[in-house]
Structure formats: C-alpha cells, structure tokens
Image: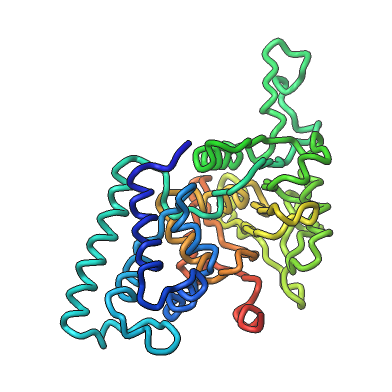
Length: 354
C-alpha cells in the first residue's frame, strides 16, 4: 500500500527543510539540534522523512521544527535551537508561518482518514510479525474449545483474547503490506522465532514468555510466582528485586481487582538481531490489556508514543505501569502521568551514561 499523497507532502517538506538548510544538515545533525528540548533519535527523523512509509510526527515536534528552521543563526558553529524568546520580529513571523504550514500538512493527513497518529512502536519496516499468545490451560477450557464439539471454536483456546483482538487489528492496519500471524505458544516453531515477535501474556500461560524472560539477561524485570497470589505472578525489577503487585479490595461480592500491573518492553530479538521482541505482559489479563492499549487507544497512544520516543530514544526499554480497573474494565494508562510509571529501564542515569 503506497503512502497517501498528504503523508508524502509532509515527508517531502520535512526532508526539504533539512536538505535546503544553509548548513547542509545531515539527519544526525538535525536530530542533535532538535534534542535541545526533548531528545529525538536519528531513526525517528528518518521515519518522518521516509517517502516509502512516512510516520506522522507528533504536533509538538512540528513546533520545534518551525522554531529551528525559522532562523539561520544556527549555522554559527554546531546547528542548535534558538529559544523562542530570542527570535527577532522577522524570525518570529517566519516561525508562525512555517508552523501553520506544517500543522496544516499534518492535519491534511488526518483528513484523509489515514491511521497515522505518531504510533511508531507497531510500525515495522519489514516482516514477518508473529504474535505469540498465552494458551488457556486444559482444565479451564470451555466445551466449545474441543475439536470434537460440532461448534468447535479455536479461539477459545487463546488466553488474553481481549488483548489479542485489540492488538491484531492495530498491527494489521499499521502494516498492511506485511505478513502478520498469531500463534498459540504451543504452536511456535523455529521460523516464527526469527521474525518480529510480540509476546502476549505472562509466564503462567505463555511458556515462550517464560523462556525469553530468562534469556534476555539485560532486561532487569522478572516475573515470579508467590504463594499468596492464587492467580497470576508478580513482577520484580531492578538490582534490589523490588516487588510490584496488583491492588485488590474486599467487596460484598468478594475480592475485586482495582489495579493491575502491566509490562511493556521492546528489545532486540536474540534469535535475529534485525528483528525485535515486544512484550505486553501483566500480572492478570487486564494488565496485559492495559500494556497493549497504552499504545493502541486513540485517547492516549500519541502522547504515550511521544513519551517513549523522548525517554527511550534508542528504542530499547522496559516499563512497568499501573493499570487501573473500574467496573471490571482496564483503563488505558497515560504515561505522561508520573504515578502511572512504576519502573523504567534504562534509568535516566543509565541512559545518560550510554
């Protein structure tokens, strides 16, 4: 599927601003200059300028673009961002004109109904993409999960089905030209493991997640069974093994889950370093769904994607998040709210040292 005309116009304009700048900027130089306020990776600049599969920049990034390109004073030494308060009247006029132009180009992409909301995590340059799902234990399977039942429905064997339905449609829409498949953990073969992997569910029902959490030594997050939690496994994180547990309340109907914990992580695939592993995990199923919806729910996904791109510009990260539960439904976490972020890796200090 070819990019939309509006998306191409915006990508060409952003590329043209960089290439026609007096300093003859490279993508690396531009990324460094735009990182004065919030860090942006070179790969992100490349994705915005791509004429094959352009990604839509967050609106805030276009403000910084306009601020940088409204003045040529950044050619004095290393290219740098001039604070808005220091603009001359003519530069301020150019700033507003360019900003309005870029926002108009961005709005035109939305006007075409294209599903491009700055969602980079689920956009892949190459396939295939394999979603490896948790599997309901045999003792918990309903009658329709039996192949001998006339109304056999294979999907009853899937755990975290809410999360799969949410994520499957989103990844397919974001990658219409790529092969996207889903597998039960018991069905995974060697070829599947060399693709872009998305792991749904925790160690109890997804043995692939259990194995890979042990294999990914750089990931300082583990999931362990504890005696006092009858369903689900808690998370431990960091060198001190700090525990993260769900929150429950006693009600007249019994114990009610009011807050779960979700894990969202992105790492290099140890079986194929040109591919990635994305983990969407939780202590319970609503933690898994919350981790997925943090990057699929239109109400928060653009803001959350922007946070991830700023906080983890290298694209490798792990984040434990609060997933509030109201009326039995998982509420999509807003990562801009600091209280929703329980643990982040790499830490700010580790990221600065890289």
